View: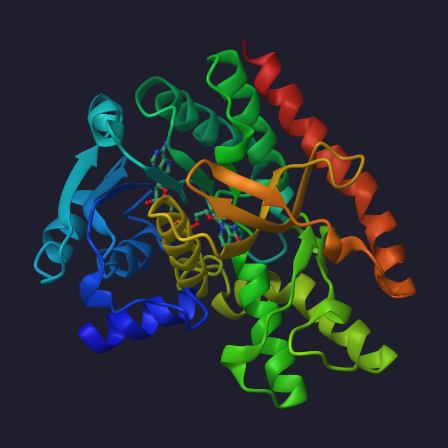
Length: 342
Ligand code: NAI
């Protein structure tokens, strides 16, 4: 376990981790939708974090067994289960990071936007409870369509008078994880070294990997750029089709979400060198929300990294312009939904 823990933390920290045993467990994390396909492996990975003292698992059903099972792992955090709306407030009290993977996943032939009708209401209800019980927490939203659920969450938090744009995050880490994996495979690079910023949003063409900004510096043919971009944009659909009706990405998503949780906890713990991509309120473009690299600090988003958008290739410039109308539409749909309901 110690070796795994260290490996996991080192990966999340890009090799700069202190010894895992020196880390003080002190943060409370809640997962809403914890009994689901993402929720369960995510809970396991968060249970492995030496930074977590309390792990609160919430779902509308089946969460008792998940918590009992996990609670036997001899890692520091105490696991508690919470079922149904009556127990939601207690689940959220004093929590530092709330992760929301609640909602329905895609089936073959569905777009993320097809999930809107069900997931929009789920996210709205859960974020209302977050606003009432832990308004200072970092809020990580995984539930799709992220391009709309983040604007919904922002509106709900505004209505409650507790919106802090620096602490609301759309989880797009899986796009980066996929981009890193596919680029490393294609160019035969050591996986741990590869970092590709992914900007825009989290659906189809709104997912824009900036391959020209890949670290370490690497050159691609036009064909490679096109093939990699399309594969990264459709990677979720690759999994949906392979699962053939049994859901969408859960294990890689849990891995990615756990990395984002760990990065957030390191930032909260005072590490001043934490960068991730996320879909956040942003002034980088003329869109109100946009995914880009951000610097994380104790207060949430400390800086939105603008340098990635400078010196784009012609291909990237074009792709950026063509994603904007779709992303704007998804954002506006979320805002309209949140305001129609009040
Ligand atoms: P799942 O159906 O396996 O699990 C969802 C869980 O949410 C279930 O346990 C269900 O009981 C729970 N749930 C439903 N309504 C709830 C409510 N009101 N409060 C609390 N929990 C509730 O689905 P899976 O595969 O875990 O996916 C969850 C979401 O994550 C989907 O919306 C999916 O589209 C999204 N997703 C996002 C990705 C990203 O990159 N951001 C990647 C993959 C999936």
